[in-house]
Image (cartoon, rainbow, N blue to C red; front, side, top):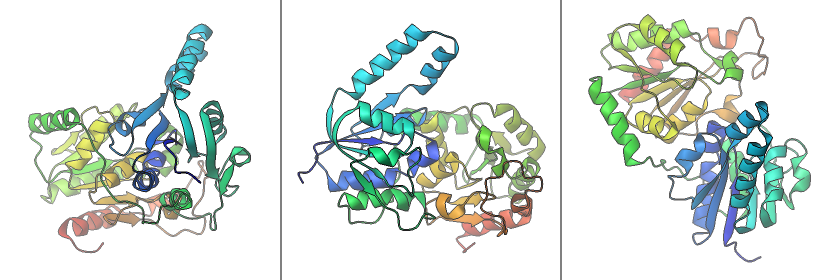
Length: 353
């Protein structure tokens, strides 16, 4: 079969899942160096994808604008936005469309695009019966594998023989200058420790208690390791401010950031501590030491894909699980401040954690 000249990659969201698709797309770039690779994405993650040299262009699906106008009943505006998106999507004819997402929405966009060969996951990993619509399906041997390795199954199917590439992302100079200005204005000097206690709204059950993050931040600061910066995102500023106040002097609230600016901030840090969130994968992409606190979610599938990553978890008989209403959350409450602090100390000193 002839090599593709135009490739469309579909992985719409979320931040963590997009980042865990990056190695496979990098591998595709190495396999097809002369092909034009477009990435279809939605939300804020599209901004940092647009800065990467292994992607030729990013097609942005304006999910937020569509949702807002639908809710307010502005149907003509919604129709105009969708028409403009479809025009962009169909501007190029693709020899190959790869759907890493595998849901009804990604399949709908795949079918709307002008393409020939379509590749996606088989029944083991696809959702919403999406596998029915792919001309070529990738079968999984084992369901419980890391998402990077899962996505690399598609890259391997396309002839990529090398292991998953482990390279940092790029952030534009404006983002780096913005972070340097923030550090300078707050007199934050290296080594800096990033702490992210948050998770998405639907994933609060994955969070280690806020009070323990406060104790950990205080302990890092009082030990003389360096300043601590609290990472926060949309809707989290109030709680992040409360955490900084609980932790005390030497613990700063991070500046407001987009994804590229957050990546630039993390790149300047000596270590990162957080739970199972997209920001944790962003810290891993920045190639800094990452300490991940895992509770109910499957660490085998979702852990940071980095040699500089340390996982802290409790092996519970009920784990992994998706019980958002668990009353005990022993898998998280069983993690002590002391063991997390010791992991931070060891990873900074170069010892094995």
